[in-house]
Length: 168
Image 1 (tube, rainbow, N blue to C red):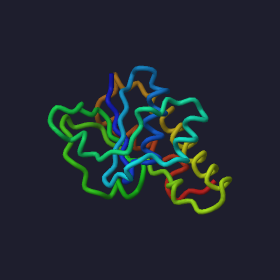
Image 2: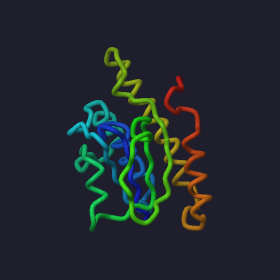
Image 3: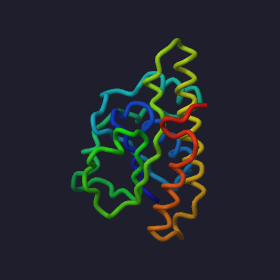
Image 4: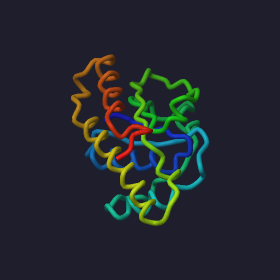
């Protein structure tokens, strides 16, 4: 089983959605985690509503600081993926075990301004981009890839359309 940590600044939307999506798509191949450098303290209600709508178990999702996973005795991460630009530019803790890292910038749906339909669309768009990238990640033959090839493949997934700044 591979441990995957999704990082974002607030750990309230994108990283939590990614944790849930990979948890389902990975079908026991991956143990998923998420955290933030400056956690919001609670999940974004729009993210929770969307995940519930799609039948995800949300009871264990919570906004937390990435320091929870950099302490001695914590699970060693095999893969660390940032999903927002601010976390990608921050100085991350030193992660033991030299995990494969990648940046998959996804536009922040919580930054959307508008009515309920605008918010739903923003969160659905982020969900769709995350689902696409995670599906591609799950399809990789990770167990048979060398570290450099894996890092390169993970980064290429992050370069897909839908990155921060892209508009549908």
